[in-house]
Length: 68
Image (spheres, helix red, strand yellow):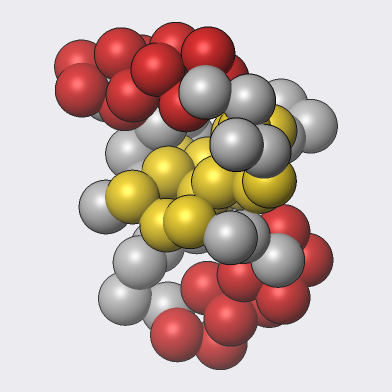
């Protein structure tokens, strides 16, 4: 299977393992992190309570799968 996956809390304990499993399944994985955490090209700093910003991230990533 392939596609895009969006994982909230990608830098967290569970997120790290989930990324590995999703990548092994063929997904391109993007994620969200708290403001102030390390972010990169595929990691977006977003407050999950900020609906407008979260909508922007989802529209940009266009995930086939979301893991929270």
